[in-house]
Length: 77
Image (cartoon, rainbow, N blue to C red; front, side, top):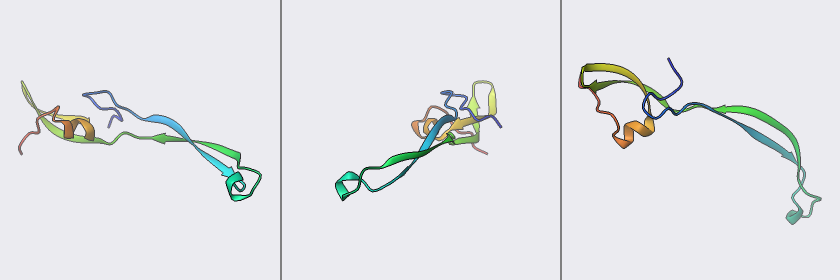
């Protein structure tokens, strides 16, 4: 299954988590310092649903934001 929305093209994004150590200055320490910067992936919430199209019913991979916004019409079973 594809990891991208077929309507808006939303896909996964690469980001990171920053690990800090030390006591903050406002709590009486000498300040926090960056120790690590780990890469991580933010995946889009992709759902495989049946959609009504002009030619009939089709299974598509759509993000939850497009489903909630009403950009597609769900097919009855």
